[in-house]
Length: 422
Image (cartoon, rainbow, N blue to C red; front, side, top):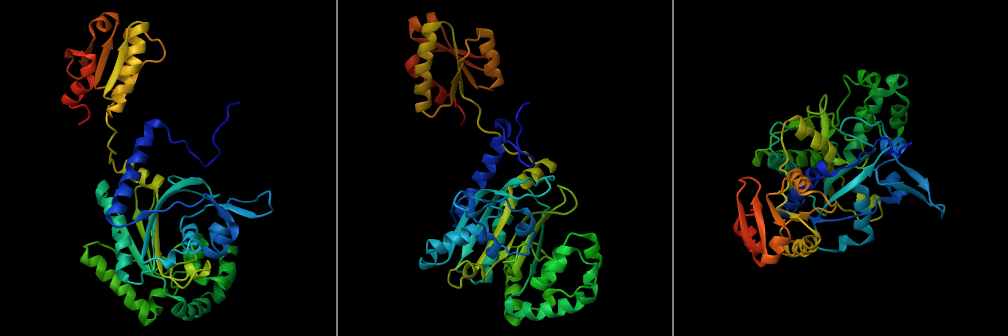
């Protein structure tokens, strides 16, 4: 029986990898424009990092983590999200001692044991950014505007931005009392997960996807109505900065995000292209997380964007990702001596940054031309014994059919003069 990839994973084959490369390059370029630098963290971390950082009552920690004990008896977890590992790196490497803010971006696989669905696999991939050391509402707006810029560059015009404030520990304490009072006589109707959340983090009940739980939340009091003056002012400033940039948004008081570390600003970008309103990017502020992981009190804000979901959104909208440059030269060889000379020509062309390929399977001349067509080569370079004796090659433009005799030493010059991939 042939081996198959594990359920919830997917190979990215050469026919599609250029799409990933394009998005990754666009993300890197955009982050560079915004002043962010790349950070890379391990694919696995100590389990405690996610229990403390993400929250013990979250679905991620309770149900979705790939956790195992290594040979040293340590509990290890494969990275289920991007933020906590970067906070750990920020604290461990004392980046808080450097001039603030620290602005970083990442591209990483993340692994969650959940039911595979459209646009969300057990191993999926994320773009994301994190900013440490800035309290200003303007940095929240900048982070959101970075996502907005990526969508605009890709031609995604009808994405929907929802924002909310989930308050701070001070105002959330009062709100939690009100929320628990509201839920107290409904508790037995809630799912088991929500009953656990009732004691530890009742606001997360609002985020429950269980229909029975949602039916009990029709008139639920909302955090946005209980914000302290500081949180209220911060949220107003975020909205003002977004308006300055002409970024349209909807205030959605039911956004609480699925992770426990969020404070103040929370946001989601919504698309209908991968099913009923689906979140394709989400993020927010997490002013207590650095301290929770063992660092000094440090504000933070960031987002994560699923690459698979972005690709699905683009495909469903009919937005095509530009294909890579064509192969510039394919060398058709006739005879053993020509094949050896072609090997050297191939190397010389590549040194000149001209993409070039040849046959390695001993195909017939006709089959070599057919293969050159399959590779979509712009030029074929025909080299046989007669051409070798004369120190020439025949170069055929595969678009026009025009053939030209060119000296072997002038091949690179000719290709560049003809435009190649320019």
